[in-house]
Length: 368
Image 1 (cartoon, one colour):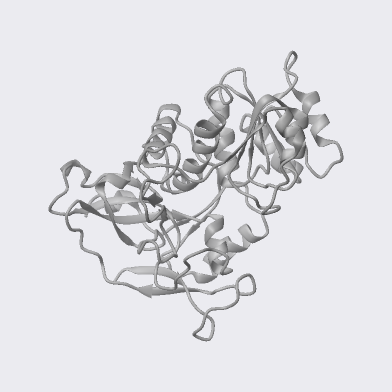
Image 2: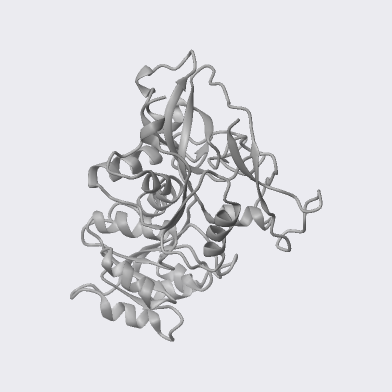
């Protein structure tokens, strides 16, 4: 029977949020049978996101011990439901849309029950850290052919989140030729995808980090420069790095929170945008009168719609962009210690890019 990885309660009962670290457990599960418009996908790789770490710490809503972990996945279509419209899906390598319930509304999910992300919660019964999964044919995209399985698995959730934060929220003119974009906390999956999207669109990109090595790596990926945000007056140093004739930034893409509005008012143009997709430093941000007087827009940004997912994948295909992968663990899903080590990388913020598990071969799956 197929294998899948779950989190397990300790001593048979849930722990207190933030005071527990649920162990990983492998289970065998029945192989699903596609019906209607569903595709049966033999998964070959999956990738971690911070939400998976939060689930193990009981810090994420809807946690359950009955759904396999992870939302990012790539695999090969090996079976079709009787109602599948496009029979050509058979044997194609695909990536999964990591969430459902949001088709195309730019404001948010249309589904009255909300947006449902794959992996580890009661809101959707599927996760990608398993050998087989069934997905409706409307919720997959053919994987970009230039990407390896590990790279394709690294793309969905962070690519979608980064695309919405940069394109949909910061806006076209603030993310293309002539624009200056600041990305905070470089090194995580979303920040790196934003960096690559913005560079590919011709923007001048700058980054912050507390780690000079990460700044240097970002520069290798196309960033113009960067600063250590732990240094006093880092925002002044950033302004001095801007190209001649450019005095302010057009947009900030932020995943930290904290004092970013205070700093942002000092370095953004009038009417500039702060697009916030996370708050890893602080769950609260003071909104200052200086931001009001400067007409700064603060925009919250989540993952994204099915349309934005397609737009993002099409852009990756057209530019031959490759997601940054920090480390790949190759396993048949028996190596719990190895899987734990990936989570430890995330806990310590050691990674630069995505943490990926390869547990199959899409080329061999296509022959089934």
